[in-house]
Amino acid sequence: MKKFTLLFSVAALLCTQVKAQDSLTIRKMYDEALVNGQCYENLHYLCKNIGQRLSGSANAQKAVDWSKKLMDGYGFDKVYLQEVMVPHWVRGAKEKAAIIDGKTRIPVPIVALGMSIATPKAGITANVIEVKSIKELEGLGESVVKGKIVFFNRAFDPRFIETGMAYGTAGDQRFMGPAVAAKLGAAGVIVRSLTEIIDDYPHTGATLAAPGSKMIPAAAISTKAANKLSAMLKLRKFPAAKFYFKQNCELLPDVKSYNVIGEITGSENPNKFITVGGHLDSWDLAEGAHDDGTGVMQSVEVLRIFKTVGYKPKNSVRAVLFMNEENGHKGGTKYAELAAQNKEQHIAAIETDEGGFTPRGFSFADVSKDFIKKVNDNFKSILEPYDVDKLTIGGAGTDIEPMKETVPGVILIGFRPDSQRYFDLHHTAKDVFENVNKRELELGAAGMAALIYLIDQHGL
View 1 (cartoon, rainbow, N blue to C red):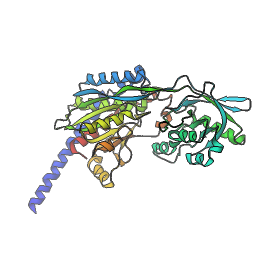
View 2: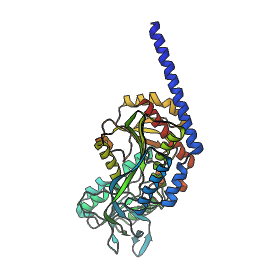
View 3: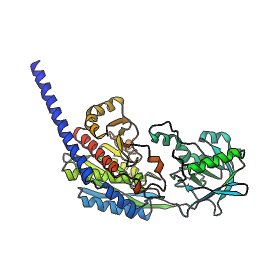
View 4: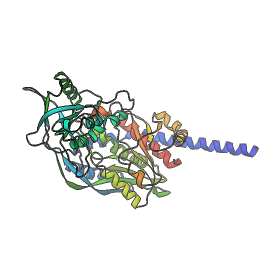
């Protein structure tokens, strides 16, 4: 019994010493991020000197070249490009739209949905059918829908505390709604912007169609204009009011682009990897600051922090700047494909693609309650002083999702900042550098560095 008690005491002492060392190392990482952080300055360059970075564009290639040079300059052990073919969709001249009420034309703001087709040169003018869901649209049938403009007008559900849940439940009308409307013979589609805020900034985003299927012009309308159109349809005893819109987008042949990868090679397990990343591409309405300039610059910052404080990870740690998350997901698919082909063992992959807001914690995809309990038992108390200790079951990220099918054993993790403001800016002309807070951005980078350090030291 005395021997057992002694062993238990020694184990407890060692555990206390390990936690003390962990706390000291993480404190150094936070100090580096908050005192000497460079992700905010790097984000400024990405937003102001390069700007929008839609896949296939000249600016996307500029971002690839610059971010590789940035990581080369930090002296990471490996910096390289990973070739990937991506879609090349262009918006063309600015869209025009108006509600037509008799002889009155009321201009309203719209933006073409990514991957949509153009209208005829003269635009489309047609009666409007307002629906709240794809199921409602399908219930109307072709005889009612044919030749009309379908107006999807399901708003965000404000009851969700996590606004990403509201985005998820409203998003099918943008993702799949135009394809369903096309099958029913609609002339075009207008989708209420995916946001809770009521303003005149329409939100773009990709829409989907099966290869070879019929496509029709599809655009997002601002929430303020959507409310106006809906009110007029009700007032004029549907469907008297008509809608006009004109857009000039075009899908060009795929072009060559790249994922950009920086790596600190593991001192003990060079072929075991912990990945942190975001997407380098962005929509073309603004600078792609929160979506996802913050994520890629935070990912680079994690490696810079490790190198600056002298932390040499046991396992290789990669910052991956994925290309083509917004309208094709080709970068994430290619990364997962090559990870399997190269027989890489990935311990974990973390994605940061929910903006650079105040960090709250991390969500772990496809894990059990027992797993998440162990993660909390091991890590929560160490992360708690930094308010990044909310460790839950949940989603991870679009770019790392393909790894689930190709890399056995990888744990997929999503960085979770405060979500309340993200969808005010998401996919709009407001997503600019000025709307990013320096301290929030730095806290997020430090939080990810802390979690990766803990995983590297203690596993999952």
